[in-house]
Image (cartoon, rainbow, N blue to C red; front, side, top):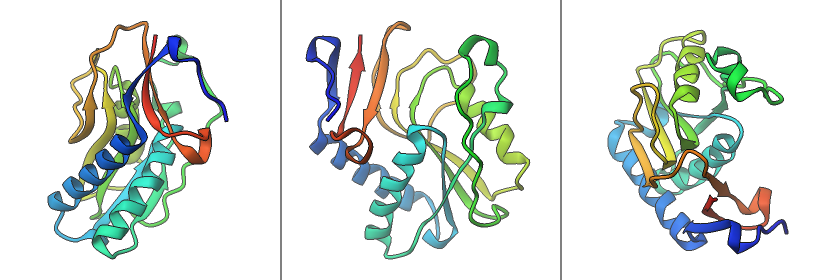
Length: 181
């Protein structure tokens, strides 16, 4: 287990609160669309991909339908690569055509909005969905572009020097959302 000392972080959502928040977000998504079969979750690397898998399980248990999922890495569409640097790019993997689909982009944290802006641009190269919505676990503010989530687990005002971490059992051996100072 890879636990971080408590002096460096503050728990925002416990494991139980994270589970409840995911259930609420799944219900909100299903209330917004007409047919769960039209839904396509697209995770934005890195944590958005894992979050979309967890969310898909929750959506499937509520709706009774299999939920299509994909991965969209917007790295090469970013306008701030010199400032934020690069990481290993994940291949885009969209399991079905996106034409006419209800697409939900899934990311763990929204900060400046530039990642989502780049994801929207990258998505256009794959087709024209019926609608694109954004789901994030945490909105930490400090937007640089006018992008807001349609579904948000929690708003957490932060300093620019702080960060938010979504930790999931499958990857980290623990679950929760934490503020790192």
